[in-house]
Length: 497
Image (cartoon, rainbow, N blue to C red):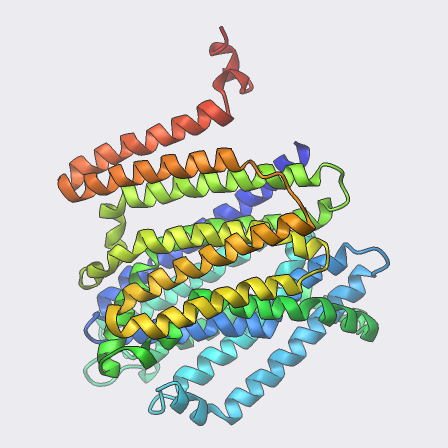
């Protein structure tokens, strides 16, 4: 239980920082969707370009974050040499990538459909190269159990991003102040400056990690490098395939949409804006991952580790289902996170959130092959999911537009999750409480149906009131079954018979 309490504490700190950072970052959505209308397609450009970013960060870190944790806790490895070697490996590949982007900027931009705006490509891709490099010192903070510094850097970075976006999108145009000549005579907003702001904030983030970057002085271990690459390459394949499950639809949408590029940007902008509401599930999974990776590798020698993994899976599912009900219960409020011209896409939110829950379960299941050094299995599972996703995208987007993206992701995650569980029970059996997990899933599905009925048949105020009661019932069920009040410290005595 002490280990679980430590996990909960670290998850709470990472989670709070992630939630605060994401919440602040959500402020970008109403700002940008208000300034860039759905019809204009600018937000579709942002969605499309950042889909490439998500994939590139996986390619440029090539599984080194997980590999870093594995080797830092492995017998016979020098942690400082492992850290320094990791920094040099990722730093070198990131530098080579940035140089190639700058050299071949125009051909790359043309292939992506932005030949008239090559600045979109070099600014964003150089930014992601820097982000990949600083992912290692950020992982080092997690290894050293410094969640407060980790959280502080993350939140500061997001606040700076918000402030600069407000300055560019709202404040300077309002006062007709053309600072540095970034606007034309009509103060027209240029989406490129959204990307310039990101590279500025990323450079500031790197400066804040200057102490951690000093770890590069401990040298380069060629032997460790070979061992780490051997461990990491299946993780790279798994990461690429897994990220394709999340972003392939946004990357491929303009190519397979049955219409003009402008209409594709319009539709993609609607989808990209609305799935931001569903990203609360990504926040929870990300916060859990930040705490869970070092926790699992540190606990791998304990005798009761499998029992702990099983309990963790159940609690993860319980609380992500609660988050799902909360988002859907208050969707009439949360929809104001995006501009009204984007509201037609809100129907994707429950599908994308359900898909993210399954991705979180898949992530939980993934530790059987990481702990047994069978990382190639992760590549197989994610690869199968990616093939399913891309196939559905190619076939369904021309007919169903962005709804095809939502259902393709849902199906891909479901298949990857099921296969990982079946194979995992053969190589690393864990007695997951499937009955209890199924019980909470069925109850959540029934309550969601009630929430959906409430949202469609009642006024927004009445629906919110009814949905609050429904969510409260689910929360009371969790407390009664998992955290009986009479067992709680201090207050428990008032509930004992």
